[in-house]
Structures are given as C-alpha cells and as structure tokens.
Image (cartoon, rainbow, N blue to C red; front, side):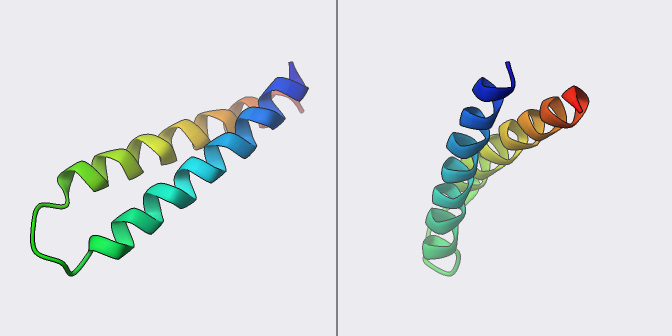
Length: 58
C-alpha cells in the first residue's frame, strides 16, 4: 500500500505542478480562469489526500 501511495504522490505532484504552471501562464491573459483554477484545485485536493493517507500509515 505504501509503495502505491508513494507512486500516487509523485503523479499528484506532477499534476499539481502542471496545473499551477498552466494557471500561471494564463493568469494575466484575457479570458476566464475558472477552468484552470478548477483543474489546479482538483490536483491540489488529490495530492493532499495522498499525503494524508501516507501520514496515516505512519
């Protein structure tokens, strides 16, 4: 279980970094940010869930 969560942590961190980069690229550009913010929010939430699960394992 721990190995799977460690893998998920790496995947989640990559997703969070990618979503943050996309948001930063468009931050001051015209257009709506909600789709980018939603993706960043989902990536952050998923990453935090994995971190919580790893912490619970001890």
